[in-house]
Image (cartoon, rainbow, N blue to C red):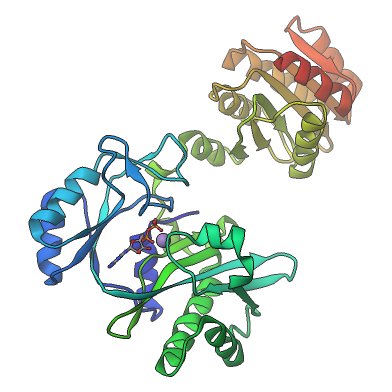
Length: 394
Ligand code: GDP
Ligand code: MN
């Protein structure tokens, strides 16, 4: 689950990480008032969306305007907010559709001396979180990662022991920090790593972490993503969810207990079990097709779930054919066949549907489909199914 920058900064402030003072505004008037309240000559007005690249991103309705703007007065703050709010911000991370901005963060501005990068992710190879740091922070970090990956330094740390002092000193040396900045970095990095573990994050990113001309450091940007599997341990975090930022289909499907990820191809897949879903996607690609999604209906696959899954697939305008690949284990294939038929009729299919069933009572399941009079393309095995659905999608 992603949250907004201002929400992430509230959390960071609570765990002792230095962040600039700021206030959220939903109207230009609120932005002007926020500017006054900060009482500084310089402020920054920042679009709040669940995507990065805002500084370079442009407002679709007014292409000269960016998602992050420096302002030097209450009127300028109001104007910047008016240009951003309720408009569409297009960044490299939103894709061409962009994202409607509903809030801006008005924050005290600072004079930047250096922009550093700090990120924490889970390194599955090492089975531990890893802190990444670079002295080349700012808006071009993706280019740094692509062209000069040796300028990004890594230290993995145990979730119980946290980041150790010697690791901070090692990183500080590589980042070219000296003197009092080493102590500042120590507090900063360790607090971040603690928060990452405490809140069950899957990603945390501070880009840029700035050193100001006055010698202070602060997180100018903050991105935080939580592991959904651990959200039950943090009821206060669930409240930070912003439904307007999430794809409605993905939300509905999640409520039905399915996991759905939209992709760019044209073959819809409905599968029970994540491993089977992966191999289904592999086989489709092997035979020259492109999956439109990943959809795991879980171990069950009752009428309710299959219907919701079908609706999700058909809501994607790119989908030209659908492949249902179900392995009946505890759930019998005959039950699944009935569920597919009921869902097929209630959802209203108008594109080819290939079904491959295997497992308990498979003969009975196939017969139910074959004698139903419904226009389903049966498949005998996974390869057969993949070939047929790729052909059907054209
Ligand atoms: P992103 O583009 O979505 O990652 O948004 P950021 O929050 O990182 O802001 C983009 C850029 O705006 C930063 O990399 C900074 O260079 C600049 N910026 C943000 N706040 C300030 C500020 O207070 N003063 C100055 N001079 N620049 C700022
Ligand atoms: Mn940033």
